[in-house]
Length: 275
Image (cartoon, rainbow, N blue to C red; front, side):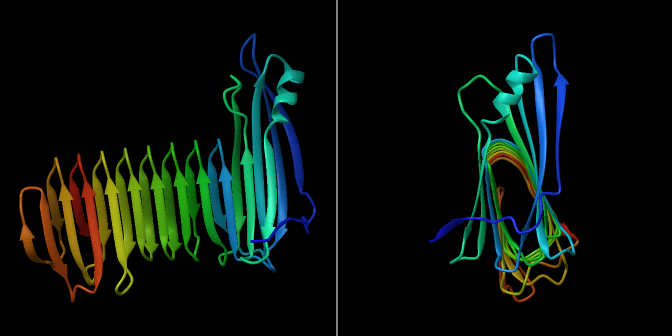
């Protein structure tokens, strides 16, 4: 893999600073930066954010626009302004994979509250690979697949297409109007999915502590397996042949059973219904 510092081909659009008095002792300094990047040689956007939310929307422009909203707390304005400089944003381009790589580092174990929220406007053709160590991830209108990971926060996608890999260790997963395969896993939270499964596609949803709610069309063709350690399983307004049913598990088939749906929770109910 060849990494090169990225040249921002379009000018910096906007930069601003705000000072917020939190108390008699603390001041928060906020800084916003907007940068644009040409997509002529890009097909993937990879973003790693150690502390902060990530939001992405598709637009009709032929470039990527990224807004960084950084903040840090200090004893006074000068202290907070100096602290915000500790947030490092590294931007590279991998020419082999046509990937724009953004790596945001914030200091740890300093007693200072650092944060960098990121807002993306992207063309529909860009594949998203997003990760936050401490924040939510929200994606709208992405049409070429996405991979979202966060260790502490919810994941929400809407009006999306392509393969979706969604993983959080502490938060909900919410999917509205997705066409494509889905892998969704959370250790602590509900999973709510409204989707259209492609022919021979897969939908795998797992949570250790929460309900799973899945809405699919009546025309879905798939084998469905559902299992819960502590809860009930319900199917509503769907034509399904029941192959196996027990107190905490179900196996059934819709249509020709061409796709595969697997739903598992260790503490919650499973509800599959017509979308």
